[in-house]
Image (cartoon, rainbow, N blue to C red; front, side):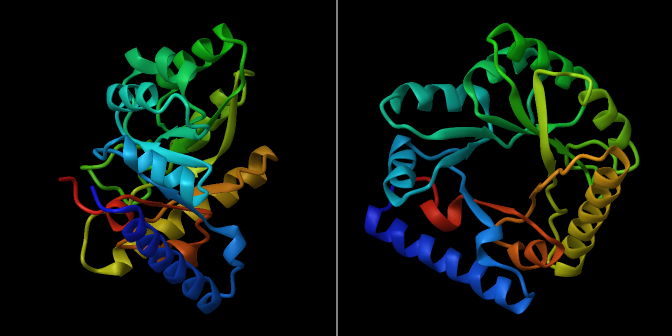
Length: 231
């Protein structure tokens, strides 16, 4: 694990990239949040994030995240699931995580809704869209997300904050740009059709944050560029 001082330097480097990109595309830096992704990193990564001032961290897998939550139970920080979530783990996720960014089926949404209702909370979620039509990525099809949103809006124990996507892995940044622009278009259409704000657009990581910000991202998810490679 890197030192806290190195982590701080890494954070400032990524934040400066975000700031410069916002200036270039005429956006406010305050509109784009940075979510530190602590998956595969030890509990010290969560401690670093809290100490630096982050309000939340992102995790991919329920079991790893729950183990880390136990180790960090004295740290007041929000936990977000950004990886694929199996429906049989939805109840646990609804109980333990602040927000689920990877809701891509009606079945998963229904199980999250029931889990949230059982513990008496309204669970914030994002709908994951495969905006790049990448067979290697999870997410509902862009053409099918309207039906998913319509269904979820009938579930009072869920609150849809917006949409999330992961761009196809490609050296050509135009591939990522098209993916992100597509998600922005889908969000705008849905917000208009359903009269809901859908303010959050979680898209972009360290390798493609520039086209994500250009397209309107409100959250960049970054792991290795902040915490280094797992030792």
